Length: 433
Image 1 (cartoon, rainbow, N blue to C red):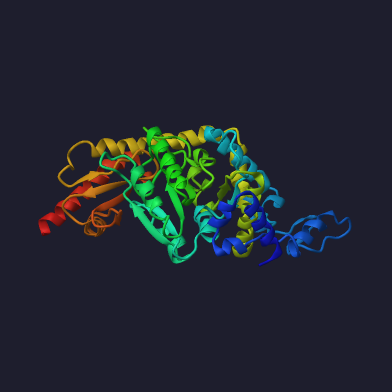
Image 2 (cartoon, rainbow, N blue to C red):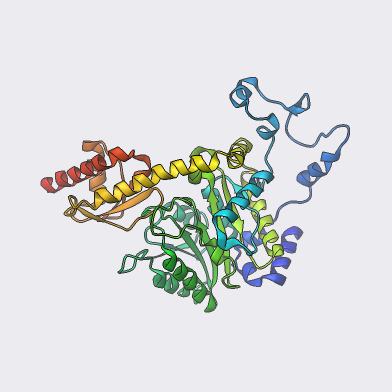
C-alpha cells in the first residue's frame, strides 16, 4: 500500500474507524498523489522565468487556442476555457455550489460537511461512491422502482448485490419500515449496507413528505444502532423540482450526523437542476464527524478522479459558474420551474379525469421529470411497442405492468393527447387479444 494511502487510512482509523470499515479494498488503497508531476507543477507556479512543467501550450502569455473555437466562446477569457481544471474541479465553482447547497438545505446549517468535488455529472459521482465503498457481495439497497444504471455502476462494475424493497407501502407512502428491515438484514452478511436514496425518484417522480422524510432518517438511524455500517447516498439528480406535498430539501443534511455508523454522501449536479444535460457537471460531497475525516475521503475521491478521467471539462464548469453568479439566475430558474410544475399538474389532472380508469392506475408522483402508469389489462412492453409503431408515442416499459412517462419533455397542451394515444394503443392490444 502506498504510504499516502496508509496515512489517510491511519486518520480514519483514529477518528472514524467505522468509516474505514466501510471502504472497499480499492477505497483503502486509493490516495491523491502529492508527489511527482502534480506537486512539482504546483510548486513551479512560482517560477519567475520559465515554467516548463505543464502539458499545455501558451502563446503570448495565454493558453494557445484556435480562433475558430474562440470566436464561438468570445464571452469568456481563454484562461477559463482551455487549461486543465483541477481534478477536484474549479475552486470558484465548488464554493458557489456549496453556498447554493446551504441556501437550499437549511438542515445543513451547523453540520460538518466538505466542499463539493466536481464530477463528470452524476453517474460519475455514483461511480466514485461505488469504487470507494462497494466490494463483491456488499449490499446496494434501492427501492423496487429504480434507475437501471445503479445495477451497472454498483453491481456489474463492482460486484455488489443489488437488494430491493417496495418503494410504497399499503397506504401508497414511502415504505420506511421495509427499508429498515432490509438494512438490518445485512448485519449477518457483510455488516455493511450502501443505501441509495433518489428523490425525486426516477422512474416514479415521487418525493416523500416531511413525515415520511423523518421516517426514512429514523429507519436508517435505527438500523445503524443495530451495528450495521450504512453508507447513505442521496442521489439528488432532480433536486429542486418539488411541485406539491413533499420535502423540499435533500435528506443529506439530516443524515449528516444521525449516527456514527452512518456516512452521508450527496451526489448532485447542474445536469437537471440547471437544464444543462450535455455539460456533464456534477458534484460529490461528504459529511462526517470531523474535517480530517472529510479530507481523507476527499483525497481518495480526488485520487479516483486522477486515475480515471484526470479532471472534468473546464469550459462547462465555467459556464455553470457564470450562471450561478448571474443576477438573473434565480428568476430564469423559477420560470423553468413553473413550466415543469404546470406539466406535472396537467398530467395529474388528465389522469384523474376518470376516462382511462379501465386501462391503468398510476403510482403517486409529485416532483421530478417522470410518472409511472400501472397497467391493468396489457403488458407494458406490448403497450410500448404498439404505442410507438402505430401511434407514434414513445414511453419506457419497466417490468410487466409499469410504463414510465416523462412529462418533462411534453408541452402542456400535448399532455392530454399523449395519454389519449396511449389509451388507444391499450384498446388496440385488447381488441387483438
